[in-house]
Image (tube, rainbow, N blue to C red; front, side, top):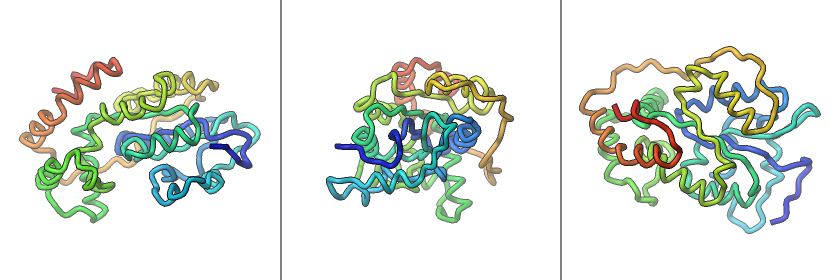
Length: 252
C-alpha cells in the first residue's frame, strides 16, 4: 500500500491500551515533551472504525488531519486505548506503517474491570450491579459476535492474547509494555523508559498528575475479587512468562 500524505513522515508511535490503565495521564505527559507531536485529541479512533476500512484504498489523509507537527517535533503519535482490544486494529496499523512503535500500559485486570464498571455507572450507561455485569459477560467470553466496546469489563483484562496479537504483526523491539502502577508512583522513571524507546531526549521534569480518579460508591467485595482472581489467574501467569514481569501483586 503506497503511503501518500502532506506529512513528511507517517505516524511514528501509538499508545494503544489498556483502557482504564493510565492512558489519559500518559497522553498528558507525552504532550509535555517538546519533541513529540500528539494528535489534536486523545482517542482518534481511526484503526478501530470499520467504516474507514470498507474499501481497499484507505483514506489516510483523513487520519492525518488530526496531526499538526511543528518544526521542533521529531516524532508523531496518538493514544487510542481500544486499539489493543479491537481485533482488526493491529493489522490495520501494520498495513499503515509496519515500522511503527507501539506502547501499552497495563493495570491489574481486577482493578481495571472494577474501574471500568464504575466509569460506565457514572456515565449512566450501566445499571446493573458489578456482580450481575461480570456474570453476564463471563458467559460470552471469546464470542466475537458479542464483543462490546462498552461492557467489556472482563475481556479487556485478558492481556496475553492481546499482546500475542500485537506480536503477530510487530517485533518485540517495537513494543513497550508499561505498568500502570509504575506510572502512577514513579512517572519520571517510566517517562525515561519511553524516551529511550522512542529515541528522543529525556522528558523535562514533570509534575505527577492524577486524572480520572473516581470515588467509588461501593467497594469491590471479597467474593467478587476472589472470582476475578480465579478468572484471570492463568492469563496473568502467561503474561509473566511472556514479558518477564513479576505480577505476584496482581495475584494476591
